[in-house]
Image 1: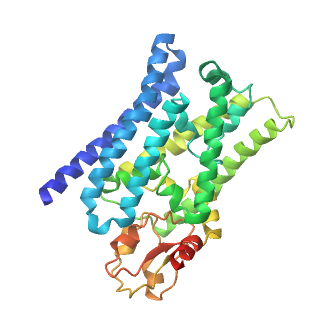
Image 2: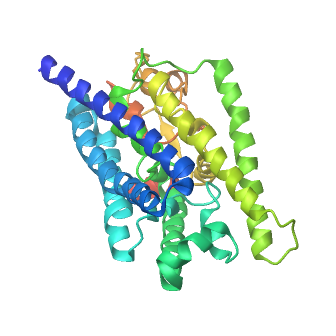
Image 3: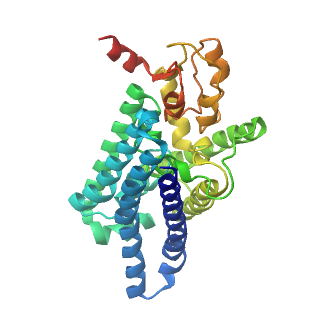
Length: 354
């Protein structure tokens, strides 16, 4: 049994390395070389990028979700098992079914609500480079269908968060960083041992969190004002390029760096959408209950928490845990040997009483 788990872990690590390396190569070609290549090569790069992002990524999520479930064991994976199922369904909808039904291979660009990216807002503006490059391919009907998909997904995310807390998006639907943090969890970090955030590091990331949400709001408000007819400097294409560079450097590359060297949820510490959802989750009454039985101070909850939240000290006094960093992954709930922990929201508590 131990030998099987070691083999499964090696396979999981190999797939994660493959995912990272291919993603960096293809993203580099797509964003850096395709615009200067011949039309034939440019088309090939774009098509391969879409095939990789949609089909290969979905296959990786399904295969690695199954491997992770086997590695962690079914007796300690009730909530994590639900996470994995959620990500598999989300990947099939966003990367396979959606693109086929809407004839749009770039639907994944619209799978994260505001303020994470202004891509949907750019698609509302006929003079933006993004609109001009997509209109010949999608047409007016295709653009409208894509925006309807985006609005529907945004409504689902925000209503779901009000009902189920941040867990709904960050540990069930997020196909940017959330899926990797769960699907590849046993393989992260790829180099060395998993490192916990120190109090000093947490303070730094707390500052970064508010810097990134302000940056995201700046881009969002600027596009909203532009769409509202407010006269602004004619630099919207420059703003689009700056946002792309921000995405590639401080989000995509940093996210993968965390997978390699630190922990899977590194980006979740300062994700602008995560920050918004954490505030909504607070209104939703998201919390970890610590008083179902008796805490034995084994520290397994703190070790399992990917967001470095001190659950043990709260459980010692039967206090609820309400931390803005909590992504509702349920790792602490699954590992608790006395089953004294549970994840809930106001809605879930109401449902359990009925």
